Image (cartoon, rainbow, N blue to C red; front, side, top):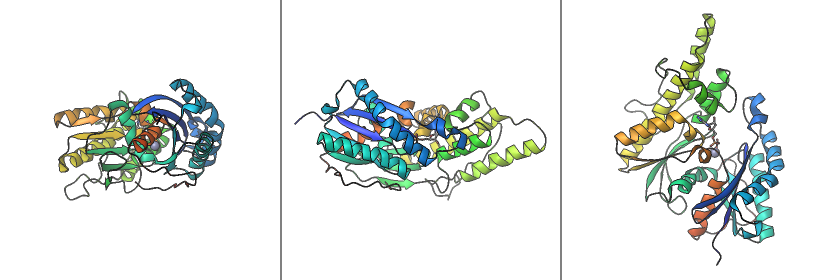
Length: 340
Ligand code: KG4
Ligand code: ZN
């Protein structure tokens, strides 16, 4: 049989992504974003995202094919995000993937978006070790997972957030500070040069006896809001840089502490951090320092593979193909609230 050349399609939020992967190697990708169209609303508007996917699909696929130097007819398998995500947005990519798989007469695989985030790292650092801890930090999720090969081995869910996801906290605090959407990069830029110790914002659930791998970020967001209100009421200028840096430090402390705790508790030696928030410079820096101190191998994909993209979905498709998994078939439905 032909060497697999897997096309991945991502459309769960505001990024339209196509990626092409063959036997663990990223051949090329195309990416379009409707983030600018959502900015004035302070968050992603599903209907606008869906229309943008429809407009971007063909041109973005063309870019991916050209980047990879392959023809559409070279594609041997198609993989698409089937969930979780915004229903109308997922539908556009999944429908495109079905049309492609049918017309090319190749198998179609539905992919879990979060498995995609984790698999993104294999494109940069090779196959995952036998077992590892994966921290997924995105706009919709904050989870600590105990994983094996990502496709055949069971994935153990160690903890989630009780309220806001880490990326959502960045987005909400950014809005509150008047820094715009998407909030992660905006906060990160504002925080550079700020004092991360200027404000002692709360680190939730870090005490002995608290759920060890569970997160909560809504109290932190409220604490930032109260601080801003108090300063404004006093008629003083809001120190945006120091607040952004202190907020970022609070999020990063909790994320790294809980993930490293999971690594130690399970007797493992590898921590993988993925998802949009993994693009954050302070998180990457603090995680690198603390992993080095504890003799833990840290794997984080480069920033362009942390945020949503098609390559990560192709990476899961490629793992599924090589593991001999059954394709999903053309009847597959979107599963907007899919759990891993
Ligand atoms: O993984 P992703 O692209 O989409 C989801 O699956 O949600 O993650 C998007 C989230 C947004 O909340 C965005 O603000 C955050 O990732 N993000 C960042 C950074 N870049 C993106 N957060 C902190 N620092 C960044 N540099
Ligand atoms: Zn994502």
